[in-house]
Image (cartoon, rainbow, N blue to C red; front, side):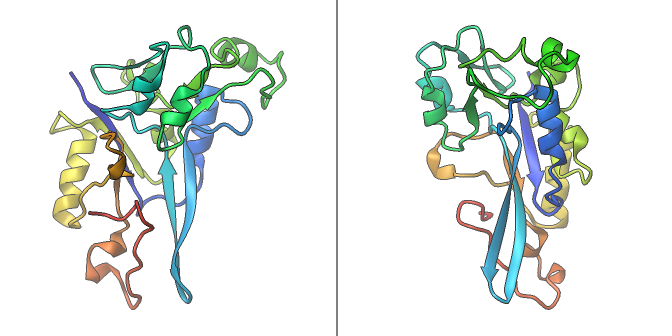
Length: 232
């Protein structure tokens, strides 16, 4: 059985939000609901200030607090590690929203608005039949695509290949190979957000290159990432 994970290389992310738009198109989320957000963070002190883009999404935690908090058992973790929400069992209590330390679960509302008119074929046939009001929604690693052998929509859309998705238990997978290459070539090792939360997230990050080797720094001193985003 696979053990899926997504690795995000912060050196490659340019903050273009292509992943955010691809995710919204694929999942048909309402206005102001984004499963794949990109945080825009400024670090350092003047005049040595730098900008870091930090994509965030559901981390598909091994010890998922959303799963344990749901009173209706609507959240399950598949054998391959993907955490999904059963819309039929969900009753919209919002317990999972409060339990997620990453803020990556949303409740659809009765008065949600959409980008297209309600009579548009895309909205009518693809979006609204999957979005019941007052139900929890979140990133699923595009499980419907993964089950067909495809990458998540955000991975496909990324123009700089900052998102690497695959099976961590397969040493020859794209993600396993990339981790090994970066450890050897740049000395970077994957780290996870909010390790103190104890959720054992599947999602991982690689720090910016300037935080690793002096040969990449040029004349500027390295600027550390914000708390919670620093490499180990």
